[in-house]
Image 1 (cartoon, rainbow, N blue to C red):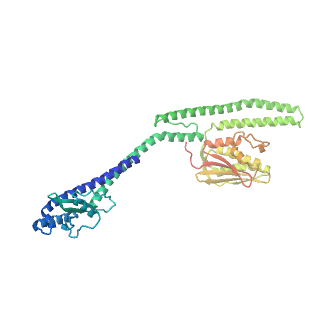
Image 2: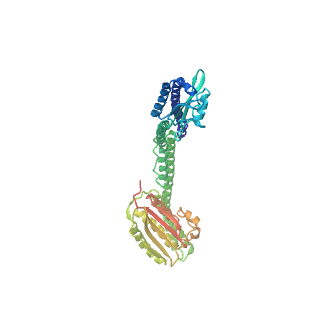
Image 3: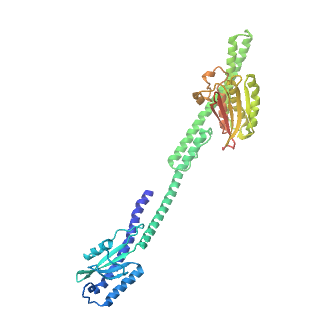
Length: 455
């Protein structure tokens, strides 16, 4: 639109300037023609033997003087020999060269002078028009007018201003229409973007309202909703399968563990095989319990409330202190009062899993530090240990289901605790992240919002 307006406006501006100048030139031509008709009767003033009366010459001089006084235009009638017959003001003479001389010489050839060059608003040029005085078919004198261009340039500038304002108004109208059009087109895209982000954040019930916008985007919204429904159904089936399988396997496993215990009564107490079978059976029971907890966590709504994160963390530190002391690990807590929105049960479970891992992997005579802090609109609980830590590749996988570092396979655990914690925290807008703790160890940061998350 801007290019079209410029393509139309520039020629229009040039045309306005040319029309204004042509109007002035036509007026000057009419004026010189009138003065030429008056000068025809006093042309003998150019000869050495003047026979015309002084009254006609005085009339011509009076007309020129009045013309100059009223319009501020220099005008004069000059003989072919450059001698002035009459001029106003009295200081107006033919120069030896320049625009006035060129126009005079052109008129002596019995032709009206060429149209002057275009004068633009930023120039201070003058308009010179010359017409011949013809008597008996011969050019006996030339009428020359030298006009200022201030008023003409002002009119050109005013015309350009009107054109510019018109183009600005047209551009604003076009921009307004474009904004309405793009808003109408992009509104469904923004809704789709927000819904995609919501689903990616775990709010699987989010859907796109398929209203407004082009037909293609409405079809895209319906297709997206169908895809989201299918994904939710698949995930729901997966959760149901895990929950049902875990629940159905617990009864046979309990019966199997009971038979193992009865069988152990028939064997020596130090039998290694029966002890190994008993340990693996209990481990399998823990995995089934964790799977059931994970399935429930993925289907549980967060019960958010205003919670003193410092007090809750201090309580968990106190609960884990005996376990840490039994292992020879110091558990230190810095838990100032900090208020945030969280599900107390979910946050407690997450802190239990994180502190349990920290104590489990920290060597004897080392310490585990737990710090609570407010970081802008988030409250954080940072748990740092001095254990062996994880590599960069392992950091990228920590928290995945059933994942455990190959260096720690002999340590008790199912690999589901941190995954359950992440799922429970995400339901309430919380996060859990992992980083290196220099010089060695792991830092786990649990973060919850300090303001109530939006639905």
